[in-house]
Amino acid sequence: MNKLISIQEAVAKIDDGMSVMVGGFMGCGNPHGLIDGLIAKGVKDLTIICNDASFPDYGIGKMIVNKQVKKLIATHVGLNPEVSVQMNSNELEVVLIPQGSLAEMIRAGGAGLGGVLTPTGIGTVIEYSTHVVSKVEVDGKPYLLERPLRADVAIIAGHLIDETGNIWYKGTTRNFNQVMATAADLVIAEAEQMVAIGAIEPENVVTPGIFVDYIVYGGKSHG
Figure 1 (cartoon, one colour):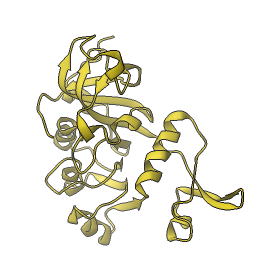
Figure 2 (tube, helix red, strand yellow):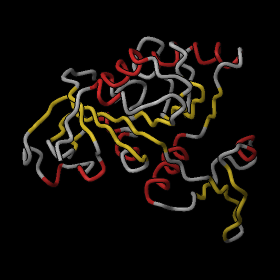
Figure 3 (spheres, one colour):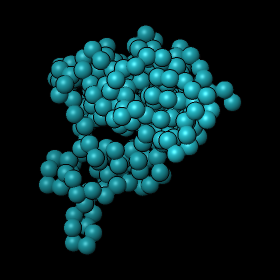
Figure 4 (spheres, one colour):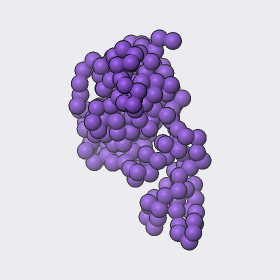
């Protein structure tokens, strides 16, 4: 199967109202070409699951500014003032989850687990969040049972991607990309560099191609 498609073909698979995981951290490791394609398409009412809201003019932050996001599930939003503007005007629903909890909830979704037990958030308003199922006691210690998290689509980015979808990430750009590749019904990976099969040594493959449905070529470094 030829997994390589154009950015236009890729964004055509993402429709209004879908849930979309976006890899990266503060825009670093975001699939910038796919994000620009979604902006050009004008897809709206999305539920975006990502680490953060980035900056207003960078990465996923541009989609928030463009008012394409209906619900944002993230760990922090302070670097993008547009988030608070849209929250206060009831245009954007924001669900804040502790960073480690979010990563584990996505991992659980990808692994088919029933949830995650964590002490993080005990005694805080997190206990009453919709993503918390219940409080559980284990060996006398309280934990929150967090729901597993999956999405309709994950858009991720890799530094090197071969023709079968095997991915190697450069530096910290693997943040959330790796785990999100396991937790969506459709995974589209954007390659900074396309390489031949075998160019990535097996021990250097971080995300195996079996998780990747389609590849797009970004062809530009974004840090």
